[in-house]
Length: 170
Image (cartoon, rainbow, N blue to C red; front, top):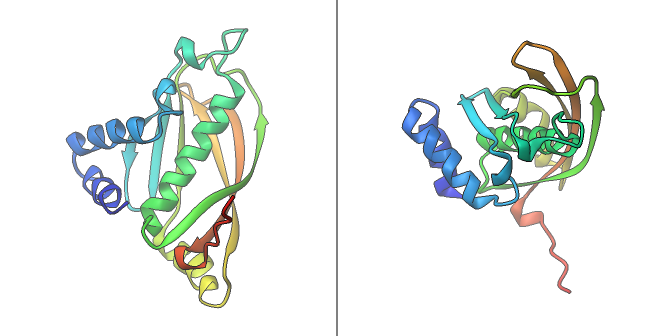
């Protein structure tokens, strides 16, 4: 996880490291690699991820698949949470996801998720000083290349310090 944090930091100012970050994430999260999700921009406060209009991302009527769009939103939101909070200290896990679809995606789409360190410190880290975990809901809008609003996601995440995680042994 330390290497991922370092790579994300370097990708903010280097096209080479942005390319490398995408390559690493395609290998680290093999479920997402067929979708060819590509981080096109990453900064301290935001991440933008593209889902290409390719056959693997299409449904039976040649629109972008609903589950692919949902995965895109989860991916972008989770990346930015890790970008701001780091993956070493906090465990983030999706609790639920609600999608509102407006139009069929017929081109590449982008989702940008904005989240500042100041907001995270106030709304999550300060709460975790007195609580074991915190739930936060985030809204993301997916737009096509013509700025048509394709769908909106509401992603609810549970955040807790790794030392508070209790794994059940099966």
